[in-house]
Image 1: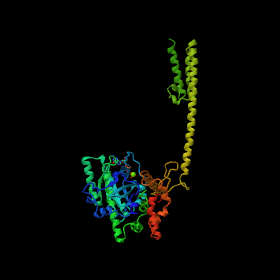
Image 2: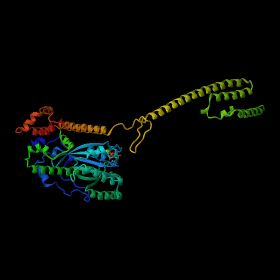
Image 3: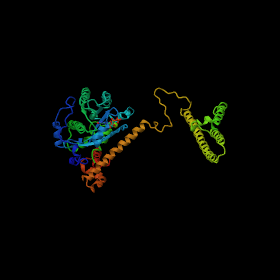
Image 4: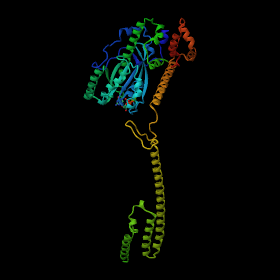
Length: 267
Length: 211
Ligand SMILES: Nc1nc2c(ncn2[C@@H]2O[C@H](COP(=O)(O)OP(=O)(O)OP(=O)(O)O)[C@@H](O)[C@H]2O)c(=O)[nH]1
Ligand SMILES: [Mg+2]
């Protein structure tokens, strides 16, 4: 029965297969330095005892000022396209990206929120239940970096303390080089540390670091999900196997979105 | 040898005319062609007619006279037409102005005067891009869009499953119909209703069509 659940959906494409733990961008602002999956996680993956993790989505929320390139970043990763024209996001949008991490299928539901002030009250309703918060800013516009703290604060307010991975992402890296880039990155790293965030510089235009970044996001979220699942299971002392499945509903409260999302994990 | 005195005469007369009316026949020739009126055309005709007469009865002059008359008639027609068009446009403009004023007067709610608070805006009802929808409507539309998008993704994945042979084509639709047998097969011991529904939920993945 467990095995009948394993092949969820069509196989993921090869560049969504994550076998070893993806590295950070800079050690100066990074969430963790481990180069391997947590021992318990590796074991669970090997023995296919990751429970319902493979069935669920982890929610990722991307916030930041308008025009910084949130949509572009997501589209580059999920669709491998880039558009020079600006088309403001209306309210929210989302993409689902499926991975195979350490042999286990895993999905991210990436929420792309609008930066325009007038949509804020709509977009903020989607902050809840985020496992990962990505605050984006434009490397060429220091004001957008200053605003990331406010964006993060707003997103954190809707979530439990300490329940989210936080990333600070500088976009449009292709527009800067040399000293200007280093200067902008230094400021961002400084802020990232204050925000307890991991820092990345990316370019949606060239694709630089985009895949590496989302792989890192996926791996961290995956590992956390597996660990939480293991912990939950040991605390309720239930058997692996069929028990896994039944417990889904007994697990801590989920937001309606994440539960709905779980019905999407497969074909 | 006869010409110089003639010119003098004319000039004198014109000067007189100029004094009598504000704009004499000579002045008319200096006017912008777009401001010509039919009156002006008649003035020009008068001046030219006299000049032609002064040239005597040479048959060549007579010939020229016919042509000049014809050209002047054409000019008259053009000026006439032009002024009619201008008049029509002017009337249309005035009508539109009145209409706009009427609409402007209507726009404010009954009572006429609008007392705009600090957080109020004026909406121009004639603007096709004016704000129309409420926040709640936008929220609903977005939610609907998100739902449809997730269903689309689901269908796309399912399609890919068929394409890649993960679900044998014949088995697929059948399975969907056999939802209940599948559930009983997987939880034979369990008579608990709740468990069944959870498993059913999980198996809705495999059978596809459920949200
Ligand atoms: N050169 C360059 N331009 C970029 C990059 N990423 C985005 N842009 C441009 O920046 C503009 C804004 O990008 P979007 O992705 O629409 O911005 P957004 O943050 O989603 O904006 P909102 O939806 O209004 O919040 C577009 O014109 C993009 O083409 C990049 O990496 N390099
Ligand atoms: Mg956008």
